[in-house]
Image (cartoon, rainbow, N blue to C red; front, side):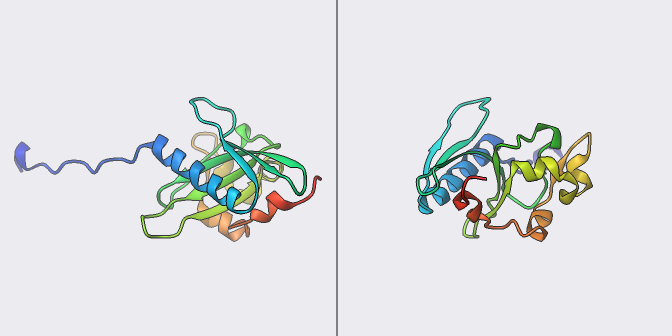
Length: 149
């Protein structure tokens, strides 16, 4: 095969675009559920969204982790903040439904073994969407409606 016949590599999705898409999808879902929600735009931010439930008086700091296809959400147990809510978003292909998995940071922090050995891997830690599905965390939006602990 000559140089002129070499197939070009498939264009890789921009991670920032994927992340922003995930944040906007989550913001829309929270707004739809009656929470006042604000996106925190910018680089190197500590949180992705702020959400306030007027009924319960609770404010939530939300971290969003987004993927375009079913691979591992890269997240290290050592970087989890117990006070945050983590929303893992599987964008899927256009025309397919977006999937959401909602986990309190306190659960990720205090029960890491629930999320497989890969979550505790020192080199490339992550959580697979199948684990989140098995844990019953898909569409767990009720977390944002629970009264103050």
